[in-house]
Image: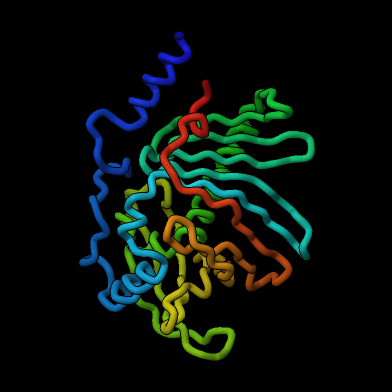
Length: 265
């Protein structure tokens, strides 16, 4: 009975008393502030979002969950699962291993971080430094993976800022429209991250995404578009600088937040 009551109370709490909007970073604008971005970039982003299913559908997504495989020359280098509770700003990551998994559960805009090893359903504590490192890696993966998978909609998320870079030649020599996505400095979950996004001006699908870094960009070709709940997501990212490396997203699911993914009972 106590366990049932605890789950019921947790379910109520996770929705937030009286909250009717997504939990975001402090003082976030309720919607994408179009006035803070380049008008041409916004015009293109509107078409990208529409081609992927529309911001109205994205506004209904409370949780997105997916599997992920990083491979090199067709051989799996890393495999895991992630979940993003957009409604309550929580994240879960599970790195699968031959001798057990590493699981990280955390609040995106809070201090709570839980990390442990798990084998055959049994948990084992990680040394403090290992737990901290696992949390750091989980945050970095969440930053890139949510951007790579959800970029058509992330372009117009609250706190996003768009710049128009110009044109760049695509793989076929035809021009692509290039945008630069950055974020409100107050958004601590994405502090220091920005992306160059190359877009096909005919289909308005994303062709390439580059992570902008001080030492040089890391770019990926985007393909494998699949429709989930009326929205299109790219499922294959091929490393431009290392053609043998690929990131594949699979088993994409959209639904209501699943508390068991983010809370340890």
